[in-house]
Amino acid sequence: MAAPPLRPEGQPIVRRRAVLAGAVATTAAVLTPIARAQGGADGPMQHYIMIDVQPDADLLALDRWYITHHAPETLERTQRAQTRYVSYRTYAIAEADAARFNVARGRMTEIAFESVAAFREGLTPEARARVAITPPPAAAAFTTDTVTMRVTPTRTFKDDATPERPAPYVRWIMFLSPPAGVSEAQFDDWIIQHFGPAFAVAEQTRRVLLFNRIDAVPSQSFTRALEVWFESIADWRATIRTLERTLPAPAWSQSFPYTPMRSCFIGERPDLDFKTEARISP
Image (cartoon, rainbow, N blue to C red; front, top):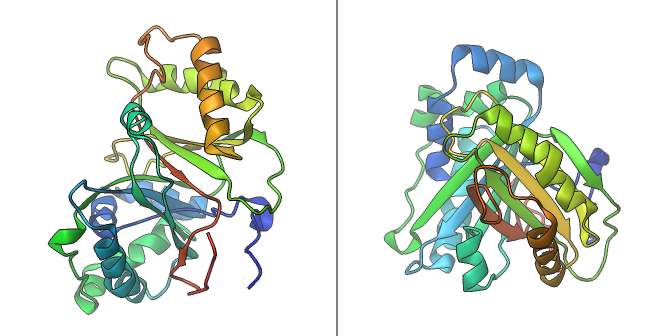
């Protein structure tokens, strides 16, 4: 089967993004009436969900539960309202890098809907009663972090070509939030004026995209998602070394990367597509 296009309709292969078990209920619980109306009017939205398998857990047990139970039940409950429902295995990252950049290791899932209203239709009491969600087994212990955003990036710092090639690209997804004592306006100014542009001018990066969390989900821990594409982990490390030397430290921190984050590393192709059931080589 031919590989899926990297940028359908002008977007990267990630039309975006994701929801695992408890994350669906958590997100729905915090939608205010005003935010719901805004979300429905504003159009396509998506969830990115990072899935961190706990050290003593079994990724194979997680996959079996997810593929056999959770994803099919989620699709049935929502009457297949998702416009995209895919999941990626994460790259293996060295322990020191994983600790420094708070890396989730396991999966990242992306689920997209036409609107917040379309997402919520599968979360009514009637929908919940119609289809029960099977809980994961104890051997599949995991945690999740979610950011809900629009499909279209809030800001594009760089968008170089990413043509099809034998080796997968590296997508570094960073969930960000303002440090304690820093206002959202100050934090956004730093991202827009310094953090994002620093990645954009780096020789090794291919794409640098910023997504703001939509107002409908104020309870999520992270408010921004920055996505940076590389051709290899070696290119990522070279970029980090460059930024450590050249990116000025903000007033609130002297320790790179200067911001609370949760991150993960994935390729441009998912290995699971629950909506189409297509077989994809990651």
